[in-house]
Image (tube, rainbow, N blue to C red; front, side):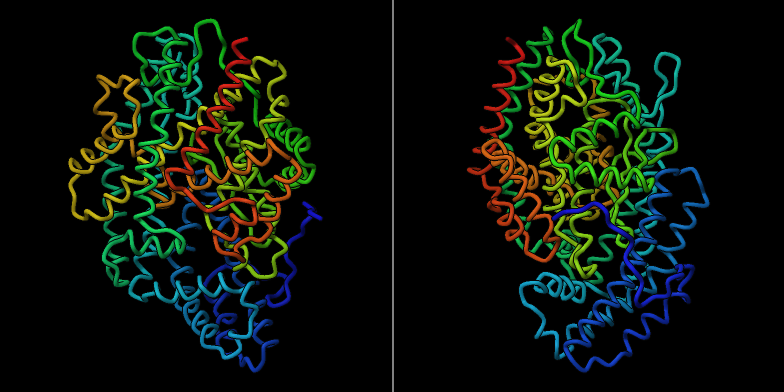
Length: 577
C-alpha cells in the first residue's frame, strides 16, 4: 500500500525543461492562470492542478536555495541566490498569489468542490486573503532574508577543547565526559562563546521584532501574536489555551522533573547538581557513543526502521540514493536540524549536525519521521493538500522517536547501554516540556510588550525560565549567561511562535506509544493513516484519525506524564538490577 519508490512530479503545465531564473520566466504562467476562463467544475479542477504544479516548482526551487545556503553559510554565492529569490522573486509572486486566491474563492464552481477534501484548503486560502496587504510585501521580503542571519552568526561559533577546534554541537560531546572538571570547562567555553555574540543577537532580534510588529500593524492586527496565530493556521486553539498549557506544565510536569533531577544528583554523588552535570553519568561509566560517523548513523537508522516497518527503511534508502542528506556537524554549517519537503522530488532532504551522541540518534529518527510524512503525502493531487498543520508534522517525528526505541539495539549492542539510552530518552520526553513552555511563554510576552528594552527582555526571560527550571539545579555564578540563554533557540529568530507544537505533538506521540505498547500493528496503522491525509483534515480530525483526542489540558498531561514515568521506572529497575 505504501511505497518509497516515488518519482518527480511530471510536467503537464510547465515545459519539461523549465527552470526558474528570474521573475520574467515565471510571470507568463501567473498571467495565464489569472486570465483563464473557468466555465465548469472540470475547468476549475484542471485550473487547480495547473496552479499546484506551478506552486510545487516554485517551492522546490526556494527549498534548494535554502538547503544549499544552510549547508555552507560561508559561501556568499549561495547566500546571494537565496537572497535573490527572497528579494526579487517572492515579492512579485505574492500579489499574483492573492489574485489567484480571490479568483478561486469567487469562482461559482468552488462551492461544488468536495467539502470534506477541500475544506481545510479553502479555509487556508481565505486566511491568506485576510492576511494579505500589498504594503507588507517588501517588509516580508527583507524579513525572510534577515531571519537567516541567525544561522550565519551561530554557524561561525567554535570553541577549542584540549587543543582542538570544535563546533558547539561537537563540543557538546564533552558534556557527557565522566570528568566533572572537563564538563565544567566545556560548558563555560560554550556559554562564553555564545555570550560573545549576545549584543549582535539582541540587535538582530530588535530588527526582527520591528519588522514583525510592522507587518501585524499594517495588516490591521492589535499585535504580532494575533497576526502570527492566524498565519500559522491555529484555528483550533488560541493564546489562552497556550497559557493553560504553561500552567499545566508548571503544575503537573515540574514535580516529575524535580524528581528526575534529584535522582540524577544522587546517582552522580554530588552535593549540588550543576548544569554541566545534566548529561553526565557517574564516574567510571563511559558516555553512550551509538555511532562513529554519518554513514554509520544512516546505516544503523535504516536497520532500525527496517525492523519497525520496511516502508520506513525504504524511505531513508531512497533519500540516500538521491543524496538528500547532510548529517555531520562542521564549521560554517548552520546549527540545528530539519527535514525539508521537496514538492516536486517527493523525497525530502534531511539536514542535521551529528557529533556521535544519543541526541543525534533521536534527531535522526525524529527527522526520519518527518521524511516518512513527506513520502506519504507526495501522492496527494494538489500541493495545498500537502500543507499539513505543524502540530501533526511533529507528531510524525516525535512518535518515531518512541516507536523506534524497541529497535535501538541497532545502535547499542550492549544491553546495559541500550537500557541507559532508553532511560535517557524517556527522561527527555518529560524534561522537554518545561523548556518548550518557557520559550512559548517568553514569546507571548515579547510580542504583547512592544518597545521593551534589552534589560526588560532579559529580566522577563529570567522570571519565566526560573518558573520552569528545577530548583535541584544550581546556576550560581552563571547569571550573565542565563539572562541570554533564550538566544540559543533558533525558532525565536527564524520561525516565531513555532515551538509549542513540540509539546502538543509530544502528547500525541505518547498517546500513540501507549497504543503501540498494547498493539504495535494497530498503532502503526493509525500512524500511517493519519499522516497519509496530509492537510486535508482539520487538526482535531487528524488526531482522531490517529486514534487520539486533541486535548492538552492539565488532566490529559498529568495522565500521559504518569504513563511515561511508569515506563521509565520499569527501565530504571531493569538497569539497576
